[in-house]
Amino acid sequence: MYYVYVLKSKKDNNLYTGFSNDLKERIKWHFEGKSQATKWRLPMELVYYEAYKKKKDATKRELFLKSGRGREVIQKQLENSLR
Image (cartoon, rainbow, N blue to C red; front, side, top):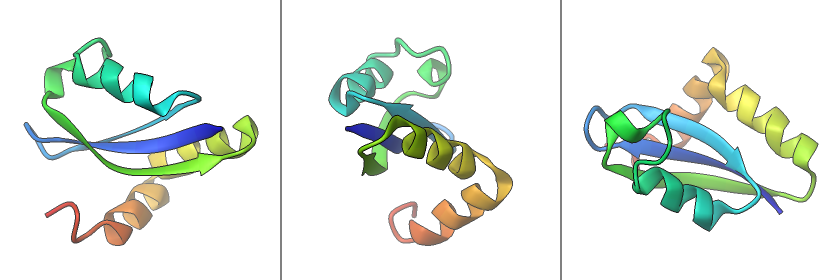
């Protein structure tokens, strides 16, 4: 399986969207501050993820969620969870 995930920084409330074939290990990597993209925004929390059978589908979804429209969609979808 391939996963698209969204993390929320408890420091600045910004979202980070990523992709991995091992969700547990990738999230652990972020939480331990080993990711350059998120280490300055710790602590982080996992607020959303999706699973895909094909890598191409997951990477396509990740790119969409990182776009302007994708950020709007995820903000709307998670509006209660992000408060």
